[in-house]
Length: 155
Image 1 (cartoon, rainbow, N blue to C red):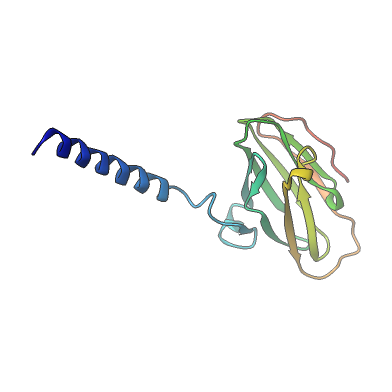
Image 2 (image 1 turned 90 degrees about the horizontal axis):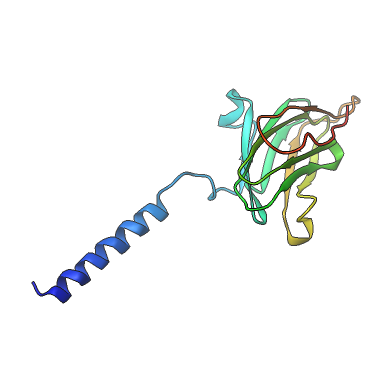
């Protein structure tokens, strides 16, 4: 084989290997919807990745009257928040940090979650809460497993 053919074959092998790695990987980044009532219910938490400038997944599902825990992973290069006005959730997460928020929605319906700093850039998502209305107010419980400010929570 000539040197040119050998180099060409090597390039093809490298390109195929890179494509295999890029197409493999984890399920994060491919799903746009995640449910707290699904397979992650046993652990009671769901991972949400904060990127510049979007959430992954962008749609979450939870049940009214059921505790929900979200593990926030900021894989972006700037600070982001995870904010749900109706539930009193507002958690800041620094780049490269992880934080946790817990809350219990009390009535069904769609709630918007967003980053306070990048909402105008489209960094929003939807929390779909299934179930009947309750008379008790929504409650958020602060918890932290890393950087970011503690934020404010409604009780």
